[in-house]
Image 1 (cartoon, rainbow, N blue to C red):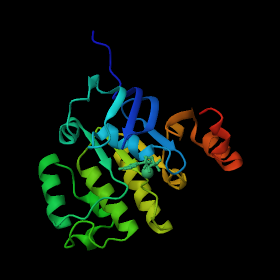
Image 2: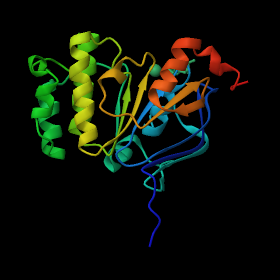
Image 3: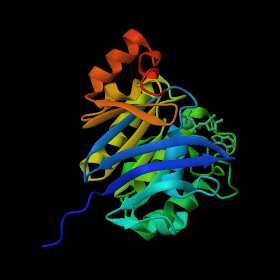
Amino acid sequence: MLPIMSLLKLEDVHVHVEQKEVVKGVNLKVERGEVHVLLGPNGSGKSTLLRAIMGLPGYGVTRGKILFEGRDLDSLKPYERARLGIALMHQNPKPISVKLQQVIEELCKRYGAPQDLVQKLGVNGLMDRELFKGFSGGEIKRVELALTILQKPKLAMLDEPDSGVDLGNLRLVGDAINSLANEGASILLVTHTGVIADYLNKVDFTHVIVDGRIVASGELNEMLNLIREKGYQAFMRWTS
Ligand SMILES: Nc1ncnc2c1ncn2[C@@H]1O[C@H](COP(=O)(O)OP(=O)(O)O)[C@@H](O)[C@H]1O
Ligand SMILES: [Mg+2]
């Protein structure tokens, strides 16, 4: 029998951005259906890591490997990775001259996802608007999340789904992430405040990333308490 491969496996991943090493040797395994939270201060390489997994230009892996279902992603373009089932919810998406309605219809046709998931995120009022043009911070997050969910990903990478979202809408965002997890998707969620954690039904593993390295992994509340008590500085000594 073939061994069962991890959904995502990062082996000593290094990423350079503009000639600067930003991700400095990350090892991580995400199995099917698991929810992983990545915590870390601004500039620690969280978004860079997600972009490298998606294969975005300018975020190439300079050392190490990214394996998805056992397959080395190195030579694959972002759209090819998307076809394998990887989706990235961007932190700051660029405006596009196409109406949200059109994008949603296209995604529903392509992936057969039910539109009611989207209604739960309260984006109906934005259907006639051009994508992300003039959207508030919270609207961007909800629409990005809706578009991610509609791709029915095996792995959803969510970059700060909680930043800029007001308290009322945090519940909507949390519920949408929970339903994504209930559908069996694995989730790699980046947050620098940890606010969204209160709204998630389950978190399997939490990792702290400082200066491009995972410096601690454990249970969510244990990690959050450490950070709240001692700050990210407490982890710095592991990085030097
Ligand atoms: N496109 C880019 N050009 C130049 N520097 C970048 C770019 N993307 C990221 N960086 C730099 O890489 C470091 C890590 O950034 P990032 O991964 O966005 O951090 P985080 O998401 O943890 O806040 C920062 O110093 C940031 O300025
Ligand atoms: Mg970021």
